[in-house]
Image (tube, rainbow, N blue to C red; front, side, top):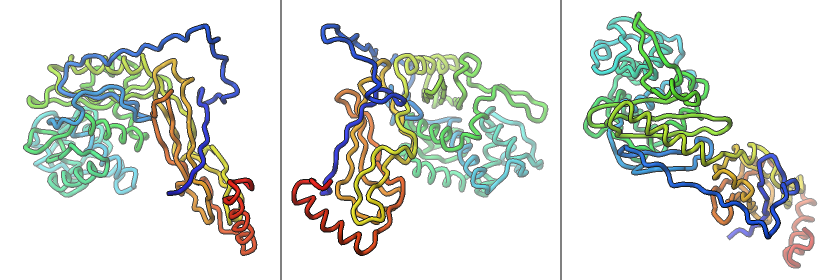
Length: 397
């Protein structure tokens, strides 16, 4: 077992040090109690509400129940198109041939014509904005050679993203046996769409799309009702009911909600609005640390340098009830007796964030730089010094 050093930090706010904290009320003046109601009742089969940056779940009901995802399937179809665009394997102006199968696919359509060629950019807009089944099949054939092969690719990526209750059979979400997903899995996918490929995310907020002289509106009603809503996708079949994966941002806080199995187009919008309003009203998201910020400089033995800059390898966000930010504290648990060589990015401890007595997050602490092994005499000197330091309980530290 590796010994460690514990360091406690006060997190009054991400931009305020403990010494700059505003004075607390006198002991004889009781602090106001923070009231957080239970989440709203939502008329749906399953739902989940999370903060996109911190990943904290704010409300949920049956989030892992396997249900037909309907056209929410196209979130994965679009995600794979965006991935291929980012990797440079395809380009927005590539022209995709439209097969008879794509043209004949029923349900919602972009209205592409068989035998024509349509740009990847137009097809991606058709998938996201107007839920085109024909566009989805055309892209599946373009990326994988066929819809069955594309579904296999979808399942591989679902597994990679931790979507444990998802299995795809097609690229559209048209009813099929053994085609299912869950609220939590769709939340994970939506979060990856937003965070992994932000350059493409603006498409999800577009209210309409015109192709082949046919104008169609985005079916997400909240895009017209709430200026903070900027995505993502609707879905409907008889088996799935009316579904909506939505995201909204107000100031620095972004929420993602998934509502599955409501009774109508209007109901999915109203139930989603309940969840979003609850999250924004009663919670706030704080950015505690930037990626690469130096949080501590522990002693390093036998290295070219005696100190190591330690921090986090990604931005650290925490979502807390409003008016409780003063209760945040962080504890750095750093491995004791760090010995060079140490590689940049190597984990050297853990940061634990608490809200009062509750642990609300953990993050790995990593070396922000490499520390090379010192020369022979430096190593020998440090070995002797460390021996006596351990012997007398750290006096030489």
